[in-house]
Image 1 (cartoon, rainbow, N blue to C red):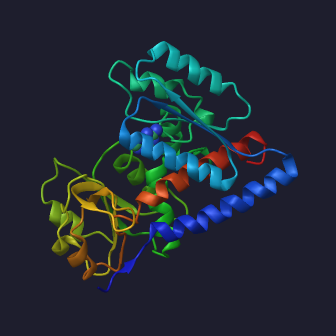
Image 2: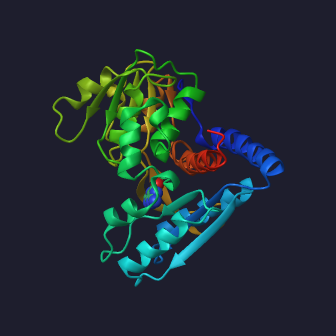
Image 3: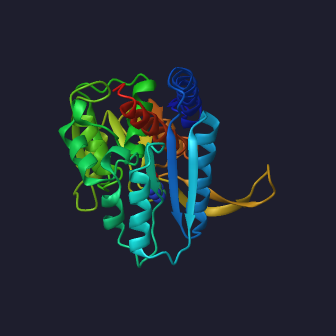
Length: 302
Ligand code: GUN
């Protein structure tokens, strides 16, 4: 293997250490810490495990965290009222409603109810607009794209003038990361192409990429021969391709695979993110970073 691995697990610890130190410093100075509420409706096992991890991470940093678990039968009105309550709670800087929501609740209405200045997921249309404008307007970049950009920067990969090809056009990853990479500024200033299921000659586009960001949700979609020699490959895919027994716990766990055919890709790429252990561990870290940012706005420090 020749590609250098960009390990999310390692970068995560660096950023969390920075945030922990900052939390302590601000606590000494202002007697307050960042506050995050995570609202979970129902008991979807994947959502429960995500939320548990978010709360655990917030606790590790010394944040004030609330896990607000609600019955799957909660009415849309009651959920909107709950969000309104947290919108007005000065101890809460970040509000996150875990998705997906039950079918009887309109997701769009719920996301739009969150105060854009507490929307640490960056999903509110106001924050999507701020991201599009770029520069100082940006308050909360969505967590997965922010993680991707942070990893590229910390790996020391040059983005200015680079050809970036994004595979996938989702609202959560493809569209925002394409937008972020084309903005002026550090970790950006690139020439961006977005390819998707309607694109002809996918391979041809990928081969031009100095930085190839793949968020398609299709295991092994990107073949090694589509990768330009020395390119930086960011694999956002987290696909369950089987099950195995964990050596650590003896319990059944999912076998995960990315959107890139990893082993052979390592022979061509200059940098690559593994799956698992790449972008995945970084997304919650960026949520913590956004919560800190929101806290600093509330203190008038930003
Ligand atoms: N469900 C899966 N990923 C996410 C996320 O990043 N934010 C929220 N709110 N829900 C999710």
